Image (cartoon, rainbow, N blue to C red; front, side):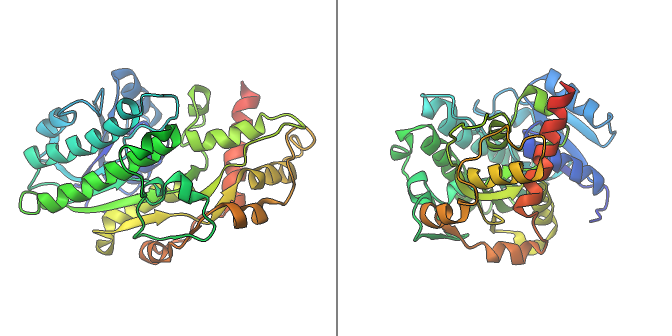
Amino acid sequence: MTTDNNTTVFVSGATGFIALHIVNDLLKAGYKVIGSGRSQEKNNSLLKKFNNNPRLSMEIVEDIAAPNAFDEVFKKHGKEIKIVLHTASPFHFQTTNFERDLLTPAVNGTKSILEAIKKYAAETVEKVVVTSSTAALVDPTDMGNANLVITEKSWNKDTWESCQANAVAAYCGSKKFAERTAWDFLKENQGNVKFTLSTINPGYVFGPQMFADSLKISVNTSSGIISGLICSKVGDKFYNNCGPFIDVRDVSKAHLVAIEKPECAGQRLVLSEGLFCSQGVVDILNEEFPQLNGKIAIGEPRSGPSFLEKNSCKFDNSKTKNLLGFKFYNFKDCIIDTAVQMLEVQIKN
């Protein structure tokens, strides 16, 4: 991938699991990157990780849910930013105030970044990519419907009220409403902005961290499933999480293809390389890592495929795969690469 080297990309939430890979891929492809992080400390840490690359700079956006959260960034850099990748959104389940902690920040963050573009960069920004989720396509109840096939046209059917049943439903709802906000904004502001919009809708995102030392601080919610199983004990029972999966390296690559391939404009790109369940992860850990075999949970070996057949909806993202035109990491390689890094960090600690 080559660029004219004058193209500036703004990445919101640049310190996140997916975003760090995106920043790395953008820099390798010759883009100039402006990222946002929540504090000077986080921003300095990121800049240091990228060896203070002169093509990378950082701005502080303390709270994406605050009104006009991105105004200062676009006031300052709006005339140079051509591409916006909006990756910042809350992803955790540690709350009972779903509206305050999940729904409102996700929607407001999307709204405020698009409003800032309209105010300060309407003539400059040409492409916007919003990092959404398969959670915007299907609600948690339908996730378990084995007769359902989800495609790029599917939408989570929960309402603002019904998605507040629990934290998982609220997170899924937050992705739906944030994505809807983006598409609605574009429709309503057709004459006021010139950018095209694409969304990236990944399933559970596994794969190695961009920088292994990130694991010492915290682990993203999806990768937490793998670290939990690595730390399990023989005989432990575990919850058999299941759903579509994708490798973080493919999620990052998809963001770059989305900005470079004109056919991706106006599309929802659903990232899944098939279904996974925790049992499948445990099987790989026990088979591929002699140091874990006999020390961690076993569950019911090789029962994963039949479990998924009965307990998960299906995904047909053939349209996305054709548009993107590259092969995704398979499940085994993705899990092995994730676990190798986790075990190295564990051993070093």
